[in-house]
Image (cartoon, rainbow, N blue to C red; front, side, top):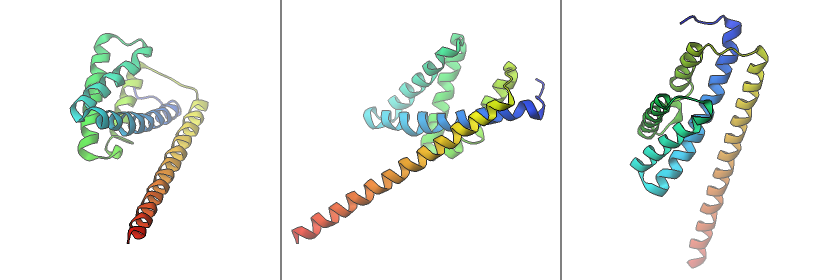
Length: 154
C-alpha cells in the first residue's frame, strides 16, 4: 500500500475527520442511545450495528464487507457504551480505519474537496454546540419550574 503525497492526503484527512465525527455523533451518540432507550442495551447494539451496515449498502459493497461493517458497528457501539464518550472513537480510532481503507481502495479527491469537508465539519460542530446549549437551557428551565412548584407547595 503506497502512502499518497501530502497534497493527495489532505482531502482524504478532511473527509475522514468529517465522516468520522458524523458517524460518532449520529450512529453512537443518537441512534444507539435512542435504540437503547426503546429496547435495551443488547438489542440496541445489534439493531444499531445492522442499521450501520445497511446504511453503507449504497456503496455497492459485497455482502462480506457488509458483515464486516456490522461487526465494526458492534465494536464501536460496545466501546462507546463502555467509555460513554465519542472521543474514544473520534478523532483517531475510527478515522484511521477509514483512512487505511480509502488509501487501499485508491480514492483520490481534488484539493477543493478538503474545503467542503472542513465546512461540513464546522457546520456539524455548530449544530452540536446549539443542541447542547438548547439542552442545557431546557434542563435549567425544568429545574427552575420544579423549584417553583416545590416552593409554592410550602
